[in-house]
Image (cartoon, rainbow, N blue to C red; front, side, top):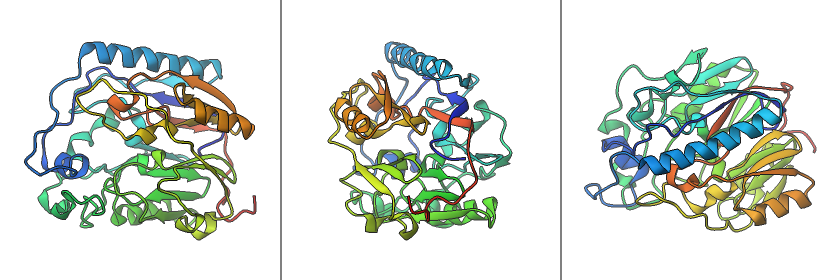
Length: 327
């Protein structure tokens, strides 16, 4: 599997039943470490208006995939503590494997059950405890939230390039998780760890692999090719322009402005981009890509753009090594 082959089957999330994170030790460490440990955090359900508008926008995304010829699967409504808006967070598809990632938060570990049948369930049988999180992360953005006692990782920390797997070490994915993933995938795949770039959260506001040899990067985080694994340093890097503010409707934004670069490829030439990001659309079109805009009013409200809100179950792909190619 990769990030750019023609999409044949995809899961698109739903905002139905969405709630703020429950208040527990993992949520405090991972999502709210920028404030004191006992500070107030948002809680409760999102308003029905926000949920309805988000679902309207997801239907537009569904229509884009269907018009492209892709089969679309939707999550089954279920009793979850957060939401089913971002299937990318907990489902990872690589070759013939559909992997349920162990996740970094207790409250999100059962979301995969409502997405699809998995071949490899890596979700822990026991709850994470205070020992799994690092108190030193509070009020210090350079300290990771997760200890390394056992594998803890979100599937959205990963990008796929055939047999090359890019794994972002951050507050939602520890080193034990990279070791676990390498073991599960076996010797015919290579997990490349990207570290020291970004402590908070997922990879898809930092890098997007658009096609073989070409990546979109966040210039505030990827300032030099030297930060990338050496086998990827021959890739062309397109710098994402400064994101255009898109606003939010929640108590506070649940994702940084760089969610504006959260785009998803339908094939090697076609990219779905948040419609408000006209500067990014222009850059991609100048690079020869066909851009399909989609309006997602609550991208920062729900912490998910076109890439987060989808996960491919089937793409056209070749199982090759791409990071050492001379593209």
